[in-house]
Image (cartoon, rainbow, N blue to C red; front, side, top):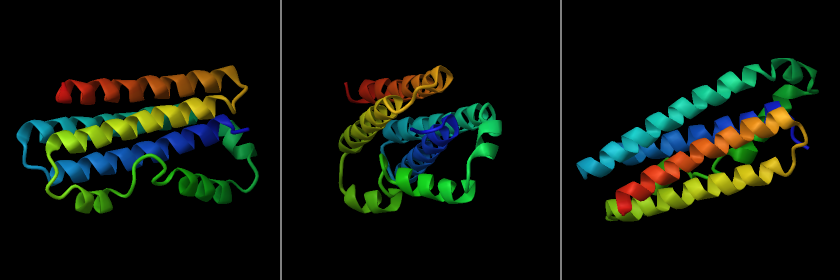
Length: 153
């Protein structure tokens, strides 16, 4: 079972990777509409990071009780690093010559993967408050899916 603190640490790490992904793509895309979409999504990811970090404060006491938290933190970072969003710089190479639509379709798949990942985490949690926090995370990710779908429809 994951503690609330661990779940939110994973969420923060996924959001950090997403923010990096969108920032790198935005810096390297010429289509102004796509650039604006990726800038918006990067800013949304940054807001999600802040939201999840504020939720982490709710679990401060719990984190003090965790044994070897420094080791656990490194493990969680490794576990969530590139779990949903692969390395942004490597993706730039992959998307050279791609259309904005192709990049957005890829981003849409990554957002859907993050939702699936969070739904899997919910199954490992018993605490009602923690489940509520994860559902909030899922809701935030669904808003990204809607934003990306608007662009390609």
